[in-house]
Length: 223
Figure 1 (cartoon, helix red, strand yellow):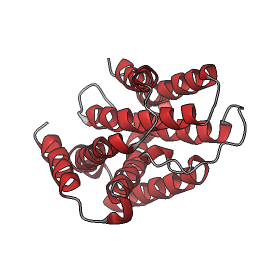
Figure 2 (cartoon, rainbow, N blue to C red):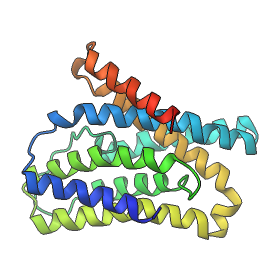
Figure 3 (cartoon, rainbow, N blue to C red):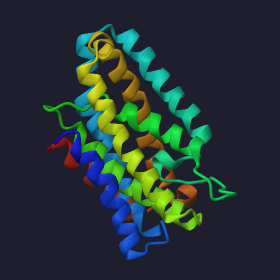
């Protein structure tokens, strides 16, 4: 089930975009803000205590910072797709390889902290749905062939469970699992905070956004 749920989340998001013919990201902004708050809170409640309990705090901090910098580097190629803000100009109908590779590496890292016995998977799932919908809307609006869009989204859907599989079944992950989780924490911290900062246009105060963020944090606390 841990491997299946992230796949279903992405494919369901694509199906909703295609069936409902969604062509605008505006209605997804509040869902995106909720997902960012929920993911950020779960990272603090679940992942940070775990890694700091099992390793040198200074070493953990270094890997978290590396994760943040890695995500900044990935966004140079993905142009913000991981946090639902697409700033990419698609000039042809070919397969967008740079976008795919950067998103795939991000999704692979997201899968590292997912285990059978922790709740971070819910944060990843709630994060994936609005981001996958925005990504699907962008790809469809970019006039890519529908077959290319489906292949892109299907391959993207496999990356997070593949990361989870590698983290459980490889010797490297078994040996450096804590460091890899700290790296994932850095990635998740960057993505979730950017979602919260950017989900309101021009960063103006928005009561609905504030309530949604509080709901996400409270929901993660009581999960």
